[in-house]
Length: 79
Image (cartoon, rainbow, N blue to C red; front, side, top):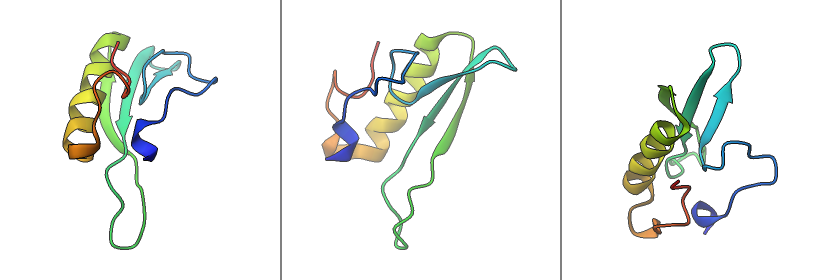
C-alpha cells in the first residue's frame, strides 16, 4: 500500500513526513490520514520541532493512528 513506501531521493531529513522550514529554522511534521468519502488526502500538520528526531516521533505516532493495521515498524520513517 502507499503508506509503506520508502523515502524519496528528495528527502533531506532522513525521516518520512518530516521537512525543514528554513524561515523558522524548525523541523515540520505532517501525516496523511486515510482518504475521506470524497477521496481527498489532506495532509495534517503535526507541529514544528527543534530536532528531526522529535518531528519523526510525532509523525510515527500519527502514522500508527492513521494507518492502523497497515503500519509497519521500520518502514514508516523512524530514525
